[in-house]
Image (cartoon, rainbow, N blue to C red; front, side, top):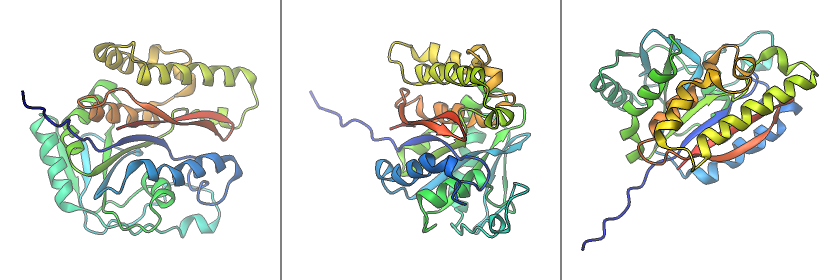
Length: 273
């Protein structure tokens, strides 16, 4: 009997990118998150390229940044002048963008490329901490404006073949994203935060949950405890659904690699590898 070597899959990471540029500006409420982003690189290896699904880009159809040298989009307001001088000059990767386009098109989903758009802070904030030299080519994939969780899982499944290459796939969002609650001292809001966080960790990491049930739980995430309190709008959660879609064909059970307070609320990062 011939022993077949097990396939190797590139890691998939759902991470928090924090409040605008604050992680880069030295905000103390982000210290643990900043340390995590600087240290997680050691678990990821050295990818030949990075694909980021950012909570801060929604389009009617899946869209891929395809320029050779994307600029920076300062998609935040009301911060000090230094927040608008941040640079992250990572090269684009038109060839990879085309490959992603072809994978999504082959799945039957509408897709297009955008040669003009720059990187938003969902990409440049975490990557400036993780890969500060900005030498690794990057592309960015949009969310779908319909915010349909099932379609975002399907989007991830469409690009899953990328895991067989040395490409790091990152879903950049926040597992808790109620802006008012970040500035509240309400104890009940912490209880709601913890309830949803526990559900999310169980859903993504429990070996007792079948793949079919896991996917259904993510599709029906609004049924989770305090779901709509933690995500009044789900754009910061859906990068996780894309990550799950990518990872589900290889290693569907995630590992918790960060579970600490960011701006006073518990936030989780998950790694599939």
